[in-house]
Image (cartoon, rainbow, N blue to C red):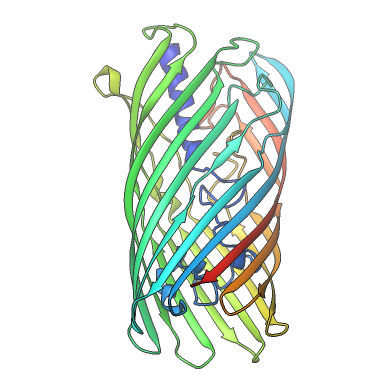
Length: 427
């Protein structure tokens, strides 16, 4: 394979993989967890059970059966302030160069809206609009010595989720929904180490995909609820281009069409809520995400007869998330809540990239609600995420390594602050 083709291969395998771990600064893998200001305050403990907020339908559509009479609308807004600094050494052709990226994370806003309508005592319909994936990372110096592995990364997505739910009896509710999902990926990196080639390789691609959601809630005893929710995989036929800044081998400088089939992982959420007293409830959630299903999808050059360019070596493990929290009704107007969580990342040191230095995380959260009247309520939530010790070792044998871009070895100091607020209104 020519040097130019190797160049595209490395970029594509790293860049598209990074696109699919969008939001890794905020949640394991590429899932953006920040879909509810209400449950932000509990570190998302209890997010698959019914409650005053219908935002729980993102994780378990059956919770729509807890909606009030009439039409309910909710608007949730989360402001993400990540911090991630990479320090280390990039060694190119035997010459070590110090690496100091500054903060590669970009502040972001994530919005989500939910609507529910109670058709009858047993039938409910609704719609959730979310951004399930998102990414924006850019080192302060675009020509830092590790720019061959990351110059900038941006991903945008939007997901529409129509839902229908049925309350079978006072104990059991079920629901199903559809997912219609759009994703837009824009990624760049240096064609080689900056001191060898300052040109920028750029990839852009978009896709539409469909999937489904399903869920059930069970209330076996007074004050006890268990919820089980499922979000299916979504198959994306990503089509776009990769641009080469210089000619090399059999591939001249220019723009080439690419395509690949990427299938997002399934997610299962198991939640529980237990009333301890009339004013206090204990909440818990366990989540499993099937990241290992990504395996190694093929990347094809659509301008060259669909010749296989490479495979994408994700090699992820599955991801897990465990949280516990509680909420206390201070009075008829005010509810306070708090929670903590541990998140097991699907990405290990053996495959960790410079685009998204993902690792296990510890969550600590607090929040509250104010019921202005029977129709209007306000929620706020705050989370601080502590990143655990994280190393980057892009050396020979690593799936991203290229001799022209050198060995990148270093450590990452990361944390995230999340501020969230929402408005809930029932007509």
